[in-house]
Length: 426
Image 1 (cartoon, helix red, strand yellow):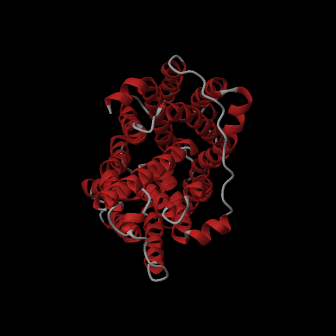
Image 2 (cartoon, rainbow, N blue to C red):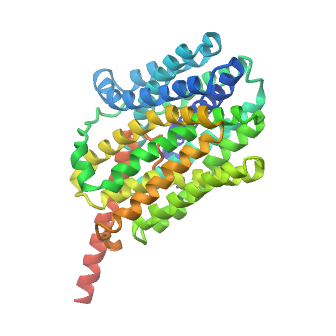
């Protein structure tokens, strides 16, 4: 771990600042939209715009990097992020904010692809797992700490929009002054969706559903808090609880996933997350109880993303994993675009509790489908499964590729160990 920190601290610091800026602007818009008098459905469209841009950026950024290089792409996109952040309060209109969210989602996706490619290039076979784990911690820490910054100023003013703009601008320095351009990387064409669904129906369906859950949590949690009448500190604590839960439970679930039938674990995690969401609808009058529910929802939903990727890899040859990962990310991105819109529509029908109802429905659907699939196909033996790697839904294709390489390396090491044991016995 210290070796990774020594070689990549500047990259990780820059990414931490980027995550703080991104986490702050998402929550801030949800609160400021209520102050500006935007309806819940208008805010759902605004929040959905980020995921439209993010999906587009993840596909176009590699081509941009091949054309002009990593440094130019990073600097250009990060500058656009800073500009959009300070324009939000000056252009307080749903259409302007939606366009801004599309642009900022596109830019953040491209920035992540660029910075994470440097991080991937810095990782060796020996440090790949530690690099992935440390990067996940940095992502979570950035989003959680961003919620505390909400308490520094009035959401109705300009200061809180300036802070993430400054943080994103500062993030340039440690990244651009400490790395050399990496070679242009090749991208793999995503696997056809029909083929992906045939190979792993649970993986494909699960990634679509989890895209909706993730985008609801990331995009609509602050909108829910505003509609429910929570104070700014309470909204900050509620959102922080979601990501703290995701950080704390990522490794226990990952440990279990390498030691049991992954469909059983998917079923259990989705059931717990869905039950926590349904319970939150009942105990919403108790803020401490709602924090516990939020931690459980985040603790189940965030690891499920990586768990579904690992489960799908169990049915793939190593050379097919990259194409399948691209297909899974596309399916997840489509679900993420729809998530805020459907959440806003349900909240418009039944009130703020529609936020929890939407998450409960998706989690329950995933649990039911996993249970059904367990009756259709036998489980892969535990000793033949691919290794679990911690990957968050906000990751770019580069980090998913890093996780894939880690899974292949782990499988290769285990195969050598088995061969060595067999030879010793012989």
